[in-house]
Length: 307
Image (cartoon, rainbow, N blue to C red; front, side, top):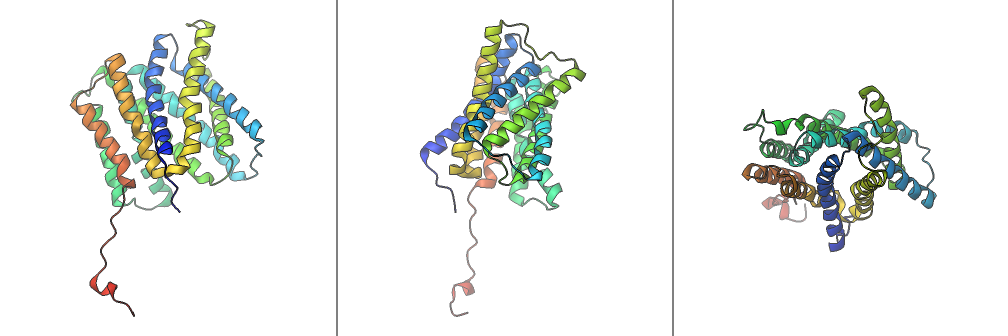
């Protein structure tokens, strides 16, 4: 049975993408205030863990007894930590528009991983979708015209973020109905947040902000955590099932144009024919697998009855 689609749910899903699109430029502004990317990632995970943990306690959510849940979530938590970590790293090194566009490479990465796991070749429409996303990302990032430009320094980290996102998606999709959305979000945030200090020890990162005043630092961390993780995830959980994953993925793709336009307005990020055309190809690639399929016309003999 198809989910009932209402205008409010569509607006809320588009709002989720828009909030994620605003999140990148906000992170860039936080760098100007003196934060580093590991500090922002760690702060957001702390906020997410506290908020989702409070939701789990309020709902009196029972802990899953499924062993697959407890085998899968630690892997998802560690891999999931790489998504904001590499993405924020890319934002620190280069334009937000390029990092946001390259993040959508998770689409072909997901298809590739699913093909490896299931040992099945993706349908032709999905292959075309992947090709459009890859071509759009390459065009928007201007890989061919500015391969040695300084604004591509963050590109490898954005690609790593996309790969981590694809692995996270593939791993968590195997959970089935184990655990409520609040419990999954809490577990993922808590495990990712616990992973980051271990990485910081080896990398020499300082996770405690030192540049801004304590009140300013708290405002930045809470604001980014609430508006970058908590509210979008809450809206996604509540309104996503009403639109379905297909239409939902198309609507949340508003992240890309919002990120590109806002970054161009605030920081002068590249915004020309290449960026607009590349973004359009990426959005087309996301929408293609979810477009209605035309049913083949029945053969003349099939219309006869009595057979």
